[in-house]
Image 1: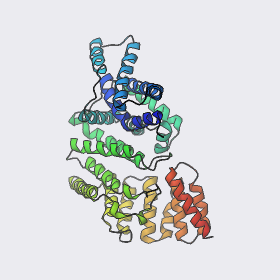
Image 2: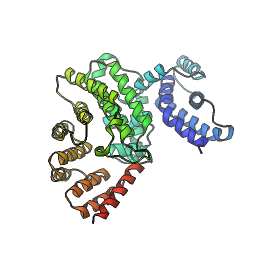
Image 3: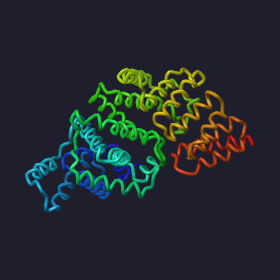
Length: 409
């Protein structure tokens, strides 16, 4: 049975970033807005189980957060700009909800604020994942491959720097966009990645995080329709999102690519993604960047009528290019899989040997060892893949596969 606490958690997960983004615009300070939203959530946890869930949970949290912000501002007795503060107080006292268009603009402002050049790239991503996605410091640490303590310090320093440097909460003017664009694209892609491949937890996907990333990518492309990078990021997200319905079965179990029902892939998203990719490549004179290469790989999968007809040599070529442009453990792992499909398990195992071990690295290695007939080693590798962060769906899939491999010994 769904409890009031469950509804609070769900409302914060779905609406939290929107409420925060608009509140930051009103109060002009990230930390104050975050504190106000947090106090509103605490009030909801105390009130809703007693008085019942309100008919409009988002409206309740929005209005309460505004009132909490007023309380916080009043506690700060000495503040410059009394006239400006009075205007803010009037805005905070409103009980209506902002329109969807205003909220979307506020979210885009928040992305650009997180991506100010005064902040380092890892800090930009960490701050965006915290404010836009609501990820915990532990989850952000998993995405950035660092520690929770280091992430906490990074977030604290970022908030102080934004306040001290008076970083404006706005979409920058046209002449500032080129310098800010790579970071904004990186943050939106990281937001989608965090939703599409969450670190730990029960859910295989955070659908709302994925949807929000697609929406922000769409807004960015609308803002800069002639720039290749936003089009490529949006293409990549759409081509990836198109395949999500087939990645889990009705029971929530993982369905591997070779067993997916391609009839469940979203043909409209695929067509739009390929169109955006082509436009992006033309705009960049076909000199592909990391997003274009990843989108091209996704497009190759989307074009294949079946797993057996997939052009693996072309996918391997694209991964080789990606590793030369933007090397990463994730790209290296996918490249090893493509090499195994194109040239046999031995080729994939050779590439894996140069990559750092992670739970997914062990899982991929287990599959390649099994293909090579080395079942005892495959069992050891898959057992190792169960140690460390993974979603419940991943753990169930690996445990079932482990039982299959043990039966072959």
